[in-house]
Length: 335
Ligand code: AHM
Ligand code: MG
Image (cartoon, rainbow, N blue to C red; front, side, top):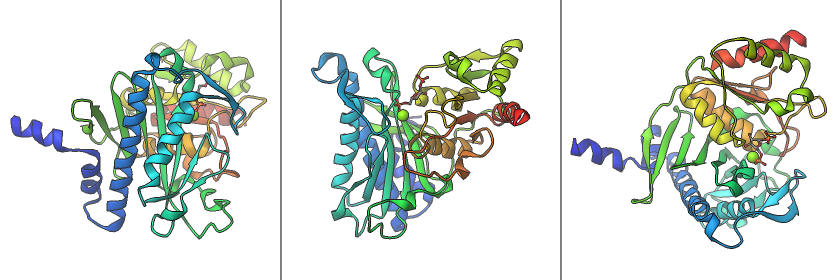
């Protein structure tokens, strides 16, 4: 029993990546080191969040508006900068592209060797920060293709199958890191006494169907009629449960375990919805497919969508296979 407990305690994130790839190849070593660095960023962010109410200058807005036209929170900036600092000295990542930055951030000294780009949403669901509720970080890793001499990062305008790895960090009662490098989905829990992410759930499988539906129903009258019909259908059935926490990572984490569907559809005025493809929808779709679920815009698999610009948005319907298919059937009936 003691040996088993010790083995479990020794399954750290970087070791797990190497085990999954069954190799010490250069790429395996790179991915393992990148994941380790993401773990460090997560620990720094978790530490600040855990004391946010006690420190000056952590909560609230900066007064600026980001490239998306949204008011920026102090925590968004802190978390964005944490990822930059962590990767600056890594030698691994040449570019970082984030929801909070207009253009990708280049680390020229890493570029000759580090051919990877990290795409991330530093704090997802930041309206939850000021009220001490769960938030997350979302990340995705892609290989840099071509030399990107003009700094336009046009190689990032490709579909989600190009992702080498993706994952999220959930800052909840405990901090969890969930990742995939294309060999299933694995969850780690931060053990604060060790300061390490330790494997807690290997090979997560999302149920084929679940009772949860997770959507901001306040937008009901702004949706297309097909979506309203779906929600009316849910209301008429027995056995559905609504859950919506205002932070994608938490809502989707629940679905990974219990099944069901999360939706952020487009509205009549904004058909592309709110969520960003490269930093939110595509990484989560990569994970969901790896766990046996699905992610769709309603008419197309999220992983097949090619963005027109790096901050492009898409509608997102994600979760258990049967539940995503049901939403799609309503949307496609009206199309
Ligand atoms: P953010 O990255 O700017 O925080 O926005 C994304 C968040 C998601 O986490 C969440 O699902 C959604 O926005 C909530 O939006 P709304 O308040 O419109 O329901
Ligand atoms: Mg976000």
